[in-house]
Image (cartoon, rainbow, N blue to C red; front, side, top):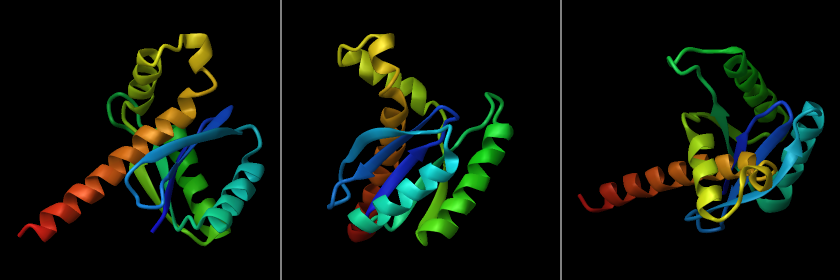
Length: 145
């Protein structure tokens, strides 16, 4: 199974794709979030061209853990992506992924202005890498028992 993660934003949609072995998440260029239909088309093309079978969509929540308008938008987008691409789509809590991605970009020497166009895809990569690590850890636990 090859996976990709989506960090849904109104202006930019971050995107990351796992390598063929499912070990590393690699950020890709963001998509224009102002064109949601186009985003669905591009993600469907990506699935076909790169063998993506599983999409993760970041599920935002308020600081108190409650659903927001963004949460509802992500749920609706996930349903549309599932229908359009024919792939499995999983909603994943995106709690603090942007904070972590921003810190990583800053540690890499980028200032706020330089990281603005990269933070959405970096957030998607954080989300995907966490998911990949959890799957690998779970699989390792099953094989060692």
